[in-house]
Length: 109
Image 1 (cartoon, rainbow, N blue to C red):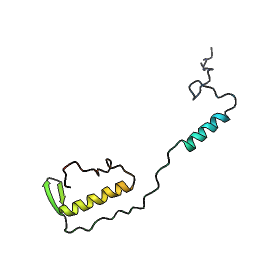
Image 2 (image 1 turned 135 degrees about the vertical axis):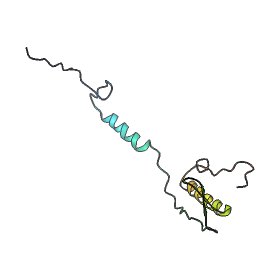
Image 3 (image 1 turned 90 degrees about the horizontal axis):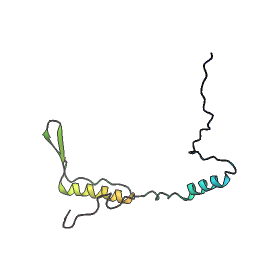
Image 4 (image 1 turned 180 degrees about the vertical axis):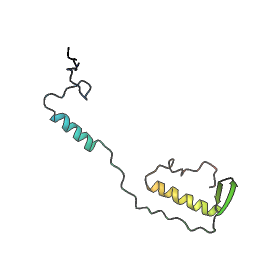
């Protein structure tokens, strides 16, 4: 007796059982309109150029342990570097919270 193969005659659909019978133009038009006008546009690119400040003193490297090194900058140099990068973050559209540009009350910087 020959082996019988069992094939399902159910139609498999990627639409969860919904059929796309009839005229699909209104649905496709709605998808096109929502896809075109429903998305927010990105802000225009910023013309801000990051300018790394010139250091007043050469940084010093210290070894704190096996394979652990620290680079130390003068306070004024470190503040200038951090300020420049925070300004770049804000210019590129980051929020003050994301750019960590909000000082806690009483922090002199």
